[in-house]
Image 1 (cartoon, rainbow, N blue to C red):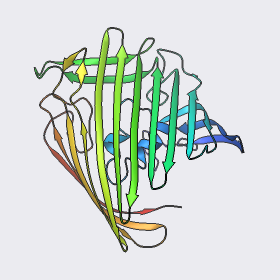
Image 2: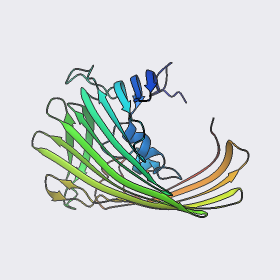
Image 3: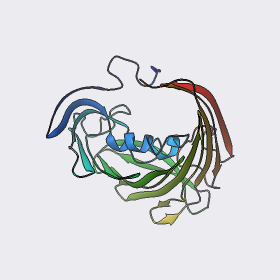
Length: 280
């Protein structure tokens, strides 16, 4: 959907040309990053994507990317993505964000179990200014990761599988931002499960952004989230859903905004969403 801050023009979401064969697939152009796509689905499905995919040191889209998807090798495949670097250090904007970047992913399937791992690096980019309350002191400073010498790294490992009418998933993710003389590291994890019966599916999830470290100092800025969703199938491609997620915060000023939070306040928040979803 077009908004006043993204997807507000033709090709603003994705616009690429590709070539495919028995050797794999190669794409050039504006593309979502593969790390983001994996973190968003399947791990971020059922109300968990706001922290698994939208939070942390992962960029969701590159405007000048080259992407390779390998063929399947006995249940394994890999992806490799490179951002060429059309932006000049110091002039990148929130829409382009980087001078160059790398994204590597490995995926495997073993019967009913699938595993996924990925790493993404962003160089010389504009990552914003994040308020940091260090060591529980409430002393809020600004962590900046801007321009030449700044970088961020993100890696994750996840697994998912199904047993009868039950499906389960688990994910670990590490986020690190660096600038000259500054380092911020935040870990997070999630677990979730779904029980399907007839046209109904009931999902429950828990995830936590653990207390971070800013220049070696422990912070009390965790985010804990419990989520639940009820899905009802209306047709082959359309379903209705009721979704809720509840956030609990640490005592320090929050590192990032989470949906439903007012500014960077630490009051608990609840979001309830009712809607329909159609895939085609």
